[in-house]
Length: 143
Length: 82
Image: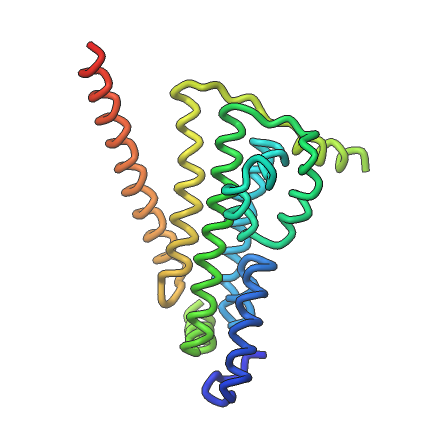
């Protein structure tokens, strides 16, 4: 999976970029991990997941609500497609969510999603430039 | 098994946070996360010591700016209302 990007045909390169983007969206940090940027991938996964889980803990899973908080949901779903499952559970409004905890929960989960978008773009850019393999080797030799 | 249910149950109700100045402290974990992720994507080579130092500097500078903004906005509201 980590063959040099210069050896790929344009179709293979496009498929590779889509694979990296999907991996980075489905599991935060997985895109960088595929590019042999393991340290970067682990940091991204731990920090963004901790942020998202803290948001859910503070505001309850009711903070993810695509019926009454649709704009927030667009940011939250960028964390992972798994957020759609949470939204499906909470769509009937059975979970209490109110006041400042709701604000903080939505902000934390929304920012986690937007940070993951930044990481998806970063991973795709690295895959496009073929930077991942090169820097991954450089980091491993300096670690 | 029972512990797992308690942990899952804690995600079904919000925690207590008052609408006071102390609740502003919740911005610091967020700023720390933004600093760590931003530097993880931005730095060309991720050397642990340098990465932590740059993340800390970014966190401190953004926190400093936020605190200054809070002070200025509070001063403005005090001047307008007094």
